[in-house]
Structure formats: C-alpha cells, structure tokens
Image (cartoon, rainbow, N blue to C red; front, side):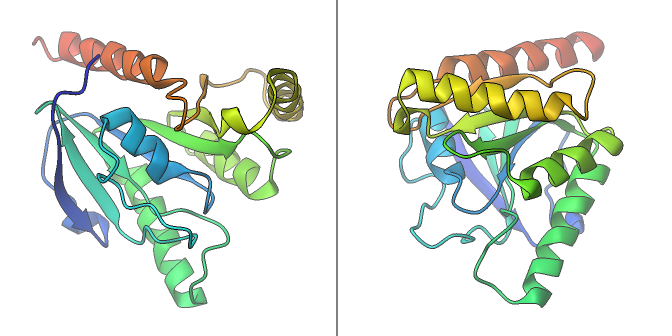
Length: 204
C-alpha cells in the first residue's frame, strides 16, 4: 500500500465524539515516549501529521486521520508515565477502554513496545487486558535502530519467551524504526490485506 493522502479529521475526548464512519480503523497505542507519533508520521510520509514532543504523554485525545479516503488511522493517548494528574490518567484510561471495547469498526490495535527494553509490566498488563476482552491487536517493536541486530534479536526473543509463559501463541508482530523506515511496508501491507478482507465481507 502507498499512502497518497493523510488528512486530520477530528479529535475526540470521549467515545461519543468519535466521527461516525463505516471505514475500518487501525489504532496505535503504547506507553508514553515509545515513539508512537514518530512511527505514525513515518507510515504516512508526513513529519508533521502527529505531534511529536520530548515530553511524554502529549497525546491526550483520540486523533483520527483519514487515509487514502478509505480508512482511519487512530492515534490513542499513551498509557503509563505521562506527567499528568491522576484525574487525567483516569480519564485517559476510560477513553482507551471505551474506544477499544466499543468502537465497532476497529480492525486492529497496534500496541507499541520499546525494543530496547525488557517486557514492561504495564505493556504486558495492557496486552493481557486486550486478550481477555478479545480486542484484536498486533505488537509493534519500536526504535529497532537503537540496538545492534544481535541485541535486537535477543531482546525480542526474551520478550516473546516471557509472553509465551502466559499465552499459547503470539500475536502478529512488526519490528520498526521511524528513522530508518523499517517495518513500514509490512505494516501497510497488513492493513491493506485486512481492508481487502473487510471489503470482501461487505461485498465491495
């Protein structure tokens, strides 16, 4: 897939404010400072599409982008160590929970994990929650360029081994670098495949 157009459509602070649409949606979420905005900008060939910041936790709304006039890319608030009040954190958790469980056209949730780190409890807890709620998700390992190839392979294997202690099988995963554009084609091809399958089911 080639992204030809990526247009900001709307921000929402709660599920009821999300745009009414039948387009399939692919949402991106991760712990604060995992590189979500950089990854979204890389996928869409637009360094200014999603706002990046040195301050973790800047995404505080659900942001919708219309891609190629036929699907939505959704930028969700990060979870974890955002420098914000407890009341705001509770609000973000409600936004995320409502969207993930109740948004009928959510096709896949991409859960971003920092490839440089061991499996973080907050990442595991969130993915475990997705699993119990039967929310379809894939893992996206970010910042792959920050490790040597051998370190990267070792880190990912350790994370997967830890996950397999709790799960019988692993979800789809992608290894990415926003700087090197690694993983771009794989993620976009995955989205294209799902869009094609959805169109078949809908008789398009």
